[in-house]
Each structure stands twice: as structure tokens, then as C-alpha cells.
Length: 259
Length: 190
Image (cartoon, rainbow over all chains, first blue to last red; front, top):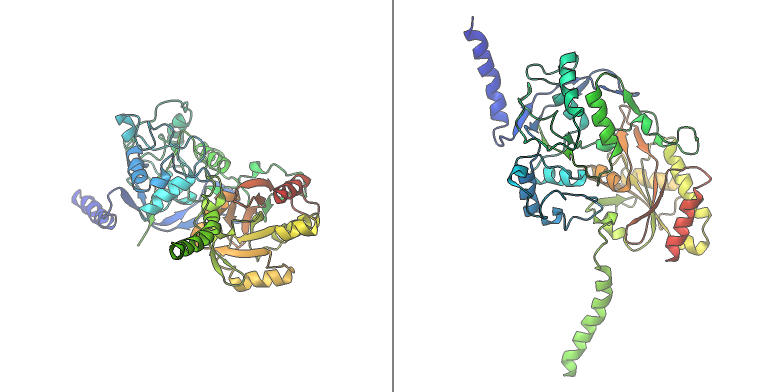
């Protein structure tokens, strides 16, 4: 009896390993259908998510430093302010030197969407779309969608309740989720490719004024799952930022399309 | 001596205007972008070639039925409040959110239907990979809807000749934002 499930596990894992084999920082995420916690007026119910590969961990300061050294225009003393606002990488000792060895293994933060986008592009990848991030982040250690489990929600909320002035943990310290991805919760906020697609209706400052139609067409979003605070806060954060903005807790990871 | 000097002088005379065009872009210019655009005449150009004149820039898509026509109305209403001289100096660039469908033909159709003077106004589509970046530089937020429409913020952005954002308005309609019109006049007077 016991041999059968083991054989299955081995057989199931082998193709995954082979697929992501050229870069072990990425793990394969199988496609599926997924119901976002966001409520869109135009699209309801489960939506397909195509297979892709996602970085196991957020990009670290050491990795971003290597990028800055290879693409000098992204150093903090060279990057045009239109792409990287005040505070860009200002926690480093110098534009091309980290402040400490601890920083090497911490996730890079204080990076703008443009900088994160350029990093992923430079390695033939891209930023994850929101739906892809939410899809993978719905998993716990054993289930691909643990969102209905109140205990899982509580655990995640514990992190969001922690003051942002705490030192960042190193990447990879938390156990991997069912996909083999780490640090989706509990480490940093993360940029999404389509951060500016998250048009939260509460953001509509001019609702009463017919001359000031802020959105073209319907489709502003609201939350379908009001108990999913973790997602709510992520979306609120992303929808409040401009592409050049940096924050002390906003990092990123990349994804690659399935070949 | 003279034979050596003349070619040198000729080179210098040519080099001066060329040099003026290569003054480094300000760090806060949207023309730092490397995006390529294709206009209604199917002319492909780098967005940064738009440097040199003050512009109103906005994003829309041609199949949009409601707010996007109002964006065109708004830009026209702003121009109505300018003198003929001011109008002659101002440029308008409308960048598509929907490059898959906004072919040069679609853009040309829209220009014709709306009576747009394509000598001063540019309707253009970016490459699909650049739409989100251009929107990010202009502070435009958008999402493709399931039915092919787009949900987007309506923003008119005023750029100075070097591509720096001088003013922005989200007010569309026949009565344009007076502060924005004043900013256009101020920028053109520079």
C-alpha cells in the first residue's frame, strides 16, 4: 500500500524538476482555475490561470546589487527620478555597496515598479500579474488553496499586524508552500506587473461630480471576500502607489511564462 | 591654414544645432522612456522624439464609446481657450491603451471622424509591452475588461518641451479645468 503513493509522488515531481531545471531559483506553477478574492463587475467566478514559473523567494539585496552593477543606469546615483522616486535603494551604504552582510540575504526593498520590471526583463522574466501572485499565495504548506481555513488566515494576519519598523527577515526562512514557493506572506510586500490595474472603487475621489468621471466604463473592483484581509491590504497598497514610488517594505519576485 | 580652417568652421556650424538637441534629458522627463510609437500614418518613432514642444498627452482607445470621446472633446475645449498663436505651438498626443486593435488604420479613422488635425495632434499606439510603463509614467491606471473594453482613469497630462509633467487634470467635458488651461498658457509662454 505504502509503495504506491511514493511512486506517484516521484512520478509527479520528476517533470516539474525537469521543467524548471535551467534556473533553480524558479519553480513551476501548474495552471488551473482560480477565484480571486477581488470582485470585478465584469468578470465573476473562477478564471483560468496559465502555467508559469515563479521565483521561490523574493529578490535579495545581493541579487539586486549584481543587477545594478551590470546595468549602471539603475544605480541610485544614475537612475532617472521619473523611474525611481525619492528613497530608491537609500538603505544601501552607497549606490553600489550594501550596508551590511545581513542585507545580502534580506529581500531588496525601496525599489520602484520600473526598477523591478527592468530587473525581471534583464533575466528574460517579468513581474507576476496580480492574479498569478494571488493564485500562488493562496496555498499553505499542503493545500493549493487554503483560503477558507480560518487558522491559515489568522497566521497570515499575524504578520500584517507586525510593525513595519521591524528589521526584515532573511529570505527563505519560512517553510515552502504547496508549490514550493516561499515568503509570499510574512516578509515583504511585492510589486505586481499590473499594479495599476487595481482600481479600487474607494479610490474614486470624485464620485459626486458628473464632470469628473474618473473611470472609463464599468469595472472598478471591490472585495468579494471581506474576510481575506491579507489580500485586501495588498491590493490597497498596490492601488495607492505610482510606478516610481518606493517603500521600505515593497520588494518583488519575477515569473517566467511556460514554454 | 585657410584650407584647414574652413572645413573645421563648417563642421562647427553644423555641430552647434546638433549639440542643442543632445542636451541631456532632465531626470524627471517621461522621455527617459525608450518606448516606440506608431502613428496614424504608420510612422514609427521613438516617444522621446516628441521632445521640443509643449504637449498635452493622454491615453485612450478608439473603440471606447463613453469617456474617451469626451477626452478628445476636452482637449479640443482646452484649445478653444487658447489664442491662435498658442494653439499653433501646442501639440497633443493620444496614446492607445489597446495596441492590438488600434492599428494605424483605426487611429486614422478616429482622426477623420473627430476632425483631428494630425499635423498638430498625434494618435499613436505603443508596443504591447510598453503600455503599462507609459501609463505608469503618466499616472494612468487601467485594466482590460472581459468584454474587450478598458477600465481606465481619464487623465490629461501637460508636458513641457522637455517632457516634464507640469500639470494634470482628470476633469473632462466641455468646461475644462481653468487651472489646467492656465498651466498650458504659462508653459507655452516660456
